[in-house]
Length: 553
Image (cartoon, rainbow, N blue to C red; front, side, top):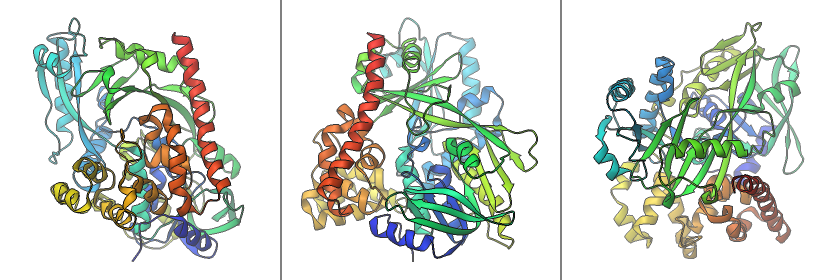
């Protein structure tokens, strides 16, 4: 009945309907919590619209550590409920909801003492494994000797590391997962529109009945009417509360999580590595033949739209990783740096309308308006359910319960069977098995839509760059089916070329723009502008990285 496709025609239709229809739920914000809320509400049979001022996952939801995990460090804080909840979500994603996107990844916890530390860490990991319950899509943890460690991870310091415990968590391309949740919401009837900015609230007496919005592409003003407005704005929450003239039950403080990307040759290990630090933990994560190393946890007060890592962030990451690695990581080897902002919630003591959990807060400061902030990526589905549970009360009628726990994302259906048919798909499509595997792990059963594009234009089966897995059809598909409107959308979020390719993929910007132009009906001027915007963004990031390298040289 509804399509999951997000493209130029769909956006145009959505914008015309935003101003003419009455919605049950209007969601502000296209991060993982926003699209999760839109999916939760649409799957209950409610009429839903979602607006996002930038791109889907443009903020924190594309800048995480790319892990779906229970939060091993929360065990030390005795927060068993949170760990159990997160592990339950991890199991659901790996086994049912999106197995094509969320994959198990092994981690080594290096030990430097023979007995005491092994007993303590072993007990913690046994509890971590036990808390996931009966659904077991990943192996149990196991103890490794120093000899085994030397074989698995030659880069760990043999003079320091006496053994290790290997355990499993999962990893995800966060931006792609968020996009898939958005498309699943569209598949169930939600209207999704990006580059639409919420300007002010529409009020009837004391009740909020919608939002005055602005289409940032055309400059058109739109009045969107809804029974309940749900704000999922993350680090933009305080700013929007002020803009909307609302006194919330919480404030959001920003914490910066910086990461560095290293070449695959920098570390020799067949598994990821987790290192306990004095303030938190550091992850060394395998990613597409490279390594992501992070993260930091530092207060931040700069530009929300473009958080940049500081030299102190990078030095901290290098120092912590180099405690256990040999040869040491060098600053000049860094091929990318990115930073995301965590929205940490501080509740106002005077607020009576705020329901607090340790990780996220649902707030209803005025009639018809509900918001949520805090939490962690892994538990987005639970947060979405919580905020919609509160929002439907505003509709003053009986509504259905959440069903997202048993609702696979688009692309999940039939994925395991397709996995076993890779050779046949490769034979029939003319693609190599490696490319088919790459497409299945990014698109799942939606691979059929990519293959249709190739059928129509066989030249699009070619790779964008022979050293990288992405094919040209995926770039076209990003605009036709995944709502990409700019070169940056494609390089930074629909693919991860911005930190997987050399020089932030600037050399590919022309090719990407040429593939997008026919779909988005760009003029030569539009093309140049979109390329220039991406190059400017990269120049700013490179200037920050160059400063870091100067300091370290």
